[in-house]
Image 1 (cartoon, rainbow, N blue to C red):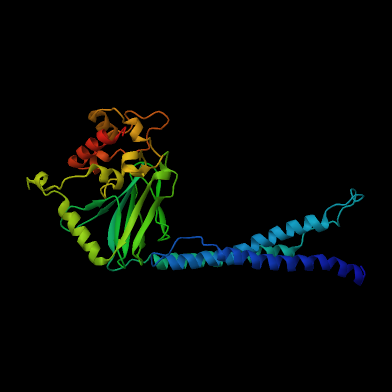
Image 2: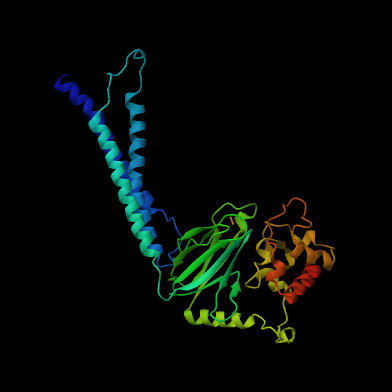
Amino acid sequence: MSEDTRRQERTPVLQMVVVGAIASALGIAAGLAIEWFPEQASVQAKPIDDLWDLLIWSSVPVFVLVTVIVLFSVWKFHMRPGEENLDGPPIHGNTRLEVIWTAIPAIVLVALCSWAYVVMTDIEEAQANEMRIDVTGQQFAWSYSYPQSGGKPVKSNILYLALGRPVRFNVKALDVLHDFWVPAFRMKIDAVPGISTRYRITPTRLGTYPVVCAELCGLGHSVMRSRVRVVTAEDFDAWIAKEGEAAPAPGSGDEAAAAPEVDGKQLFAEGNGTATSCGACHTLADAGTSSATGPDLGKTLSGKDEDFIRKAIVEPDADVASGFQAGIMPKNYGDTLSPEELDALVTYLGKAAGK
Ligand code: CUA
């Protein structure tokens, strides 16, 4: 083979390497420029995002390189008319090349797994002053329980956390697989029937963030959402003290007299902190809500009596509006609403439907 031929063969390979390098740089820049995640609201978020950036640095060049080689080969080395019967030189493997293309990916993978392991172990470390919260997933709602030393646990359907106070979530499922995920905290874990799973976070930012179910769990999976409110330590302590008292003490007798007047319309639109609001899934003109997950109650409850409405709330699958499917609306409103709240809601719906 003459010097000239060898140089001619080397030129396209060189071009390919240059194009591949430029494309990799562009790919990495694009990968790092994209805002993949919401704001960082936990101690754990930054290390996870750094890990993600490392994955972009290491995986984008591989993807780009393979794509460039394929496209370049199609362009440069495809068969031309008259070459139908030509074939390349016979090859019997290339040991050196095979060792290289096995060793490099193996080293990269072992390095990435080790890094990920170190990061995950580090951010999952138990904290001395951590607070335990029991998280329960069921079709299709999350609920939270705060164990209290020497008292009944405080229950809530909105997750309250204290800024800077480490938390350990013990996660359970009552029916099928769910997955407890707060994107702003970055951590997520499956809720598995029969066992308890866990993760730890420490909130670093005040605010309200979405809680999402990240495991396809049935028809209502997409509406299985809740909220987490990160408040100051003082506000949190005040909240939990208030909730602890709010649970009616046995034998106190006059809870009904002490209970404040319930505003059915407000309850409909905002929920009560334990029960998810009706307005999150239902349209009702009078309450100004417009979600189409469930039926428009202004229509389906129009002209119905209070017994029908009450049953529709506590036994949602007994009579499902046409065009909608059973099993989506949570079945626990009989538990999460107090008798007074249920009465107020039924009265309100009886008046507001059909308006
Ligand atoms: Cu629960 Cu998806």
